[in-house]
Length: 157
Figure 1 (spheres, helix red, strand yellow):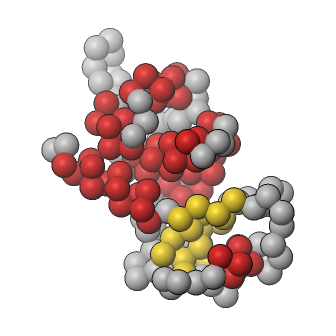
Figure 2 (cartoon, rainbow, N blue to C red; figure 1 turned 180 degrees about the horizontal axis):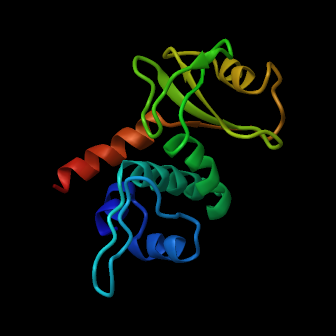
């Protein structure tokens, strides 16, 4: 868990608090602690979720909402392209040859959108929100967050 904290920039005590409060839960690829003094091991999906949750909370989101939004990328597959058409993606993986964005409208479930570099922000939102642009829609560019977390994690090994 300490390695994930360092890789994501989330203070270890805060990450432990998120786990104890159920903000971040163990899932596929994770190993909960097997007993007193035995460290938990987070896998790729949890590393990704914690990195995105950390970025969202640093931007002012509440931790529970941030973790739920991050889960849409870390543990759910697929997404849409710039035209709103289905786009295949493995959970916790960035789109290949496209930039990856998390779009969360206030009243809709979050959507992962894969677009060519340089795609207009309004088009990203429109593709995720059935061609509307609801006020209060959150758009997060995932590539720099996820790539930085995995780069730092690799350097810890």
